[in-house]
Length: 289
Image (cartoon, rainbow, N blue to C red):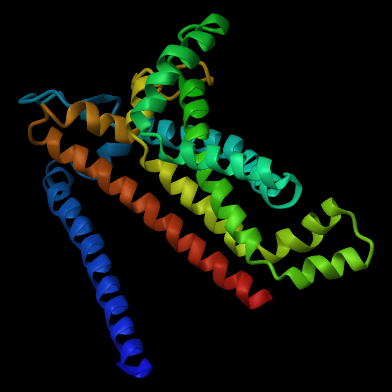
């Protein structure tokens, strides 16, 4: 088989894979939209942001469908986890790539990879028996926004660490050698040469961990307390959109069921907006190079 024919087969395979991936996303989006339409027609989109509470009582004219507390819960848990995991993940990647002795670096990488492979329910169970009682000893109740932030930060840390390490790896070694030849310290080289050169990959790591945090369900369901309210402090319990879907989908009837699909559609919109923002910023970064 000629190399040209092999290339054509590879290109055709990759195109088919891209088409299938795009179709899967489109089918999921269409399914969410179709299941959300009854609620959007019967309830109206504005009531999801203006109702007094979330109380979708079946067969009752007094049902309320306010998603704002759960949107706030989702965003605050995600933002707090990102604030913790991003510097820790970047620091781990820097340690792996530039500071760790070879043997220690191998062991440390294995630990991070092991963290990435642990199921979320295990993190949630560990948080329930360890983090929640610890927070409860400081400020009751232990199941709270802070517990969700801590668990979620641990869960997404391997993503930013491993992707950042991969971004550091592709920085041309000539840049690092040139900085060393100029007499720059190791930290000055990382700060002034490596990080600017790997900025696109680092931004990708942050986007990936944000998407993971937005979509996490089981762990936050187990440690956040699942109270539908806008938290006034990190010690108050919250409920996220994903946890709300997991808790109520088993017994939900229309229009309650359709309202839960609206929650899923909101999550999909958030992730799509995140990807679009990443694409715009990446293009601007490439144009500025």
